[in-house]
Image 1 (cartoon, rainbow, N blue to C red):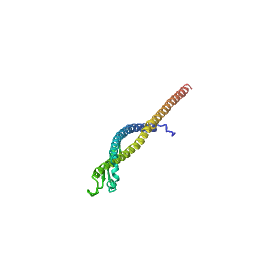
Image 2: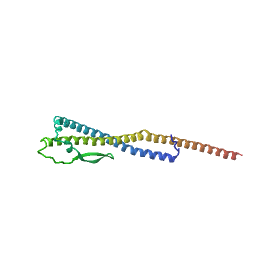
Image 3: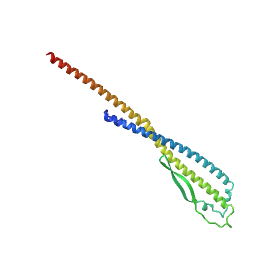
Image 4: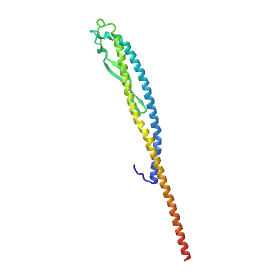
Length: 205
């Protein structure tokens, strides 16, 4: 444990530090609450998207056998070319937000390909888009959770270490200074009494 100087200068420094900690702590606590709320909201949205994805997959499952037809290489139409996202700031932290997934448009012969191809492409692209949105939101939640861990550590540091330590240091310094002042007053009284005794002795001599 670091020893502190038991001086008035150190007392002022500790009091200033305590005020500073007192200003920082509410800001950190608010940031912690905002991060916790955003994580909860993101998880609710994620659950909704995951349920939608499950329903889409179940709907597709009934006709996936058609995709094995030899004249159809549907994978050519399902490769994303660009993921479009933007950043959202939450309590000073930037997280990615999914906007869209762009697919390359490929021409095909309407007479050679089966009639259901357009419907299949649209349905499968919806599944791919939902998957990408889930991945993007999960990445954002991971960033928020990491920031929440760091913020929680800082809150605990201020609440459980820095503020109590500053308060204890102030208490110790005040006690020491008080004792020094009391000792100084005591010494002053003794000195005064000795001077008075000397004056009396001289007067009687």
